[in-house]
Image 1 (cartoon, rainbow, N blue to C red):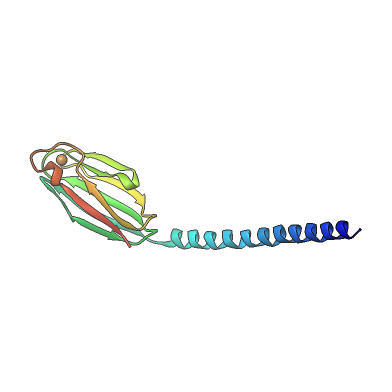
Image 2: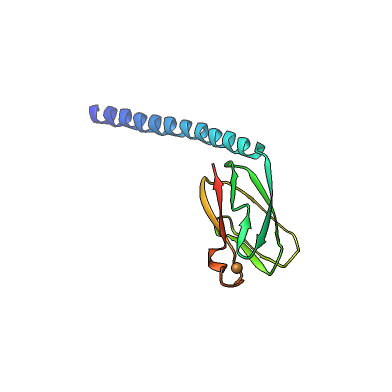
Length: 133
Ligand SMILES: [Cu+2]
């Protein structure tokens, strides 16, 4: 009889434990949802970027985490490219044609963007930095 009572008590503890554990989860989810909402309220940051042999201007673009980033990029000489692999951005820049790329800066850090079209001797040094604070 004592053994059975013991098992029942253990059973209650386990069920109670699971109950408490499950109670905590929705609270965590709610916190995440709140964070997402805050992120969605962040603004669109627009930049005009010029590409020419062999540099981007501006070379450093700084935004806040959660910002929606809009880049209007134009090559003013030969065909260049604009690649920002961390945000799945890769585009060819035909001379004097403005291209627009948009992405959400959803992670903090410093991310290199670079020219992705062979454009001459300075090609490999043609890069810049996206800073997400
Ligand atoms: Cu290039």
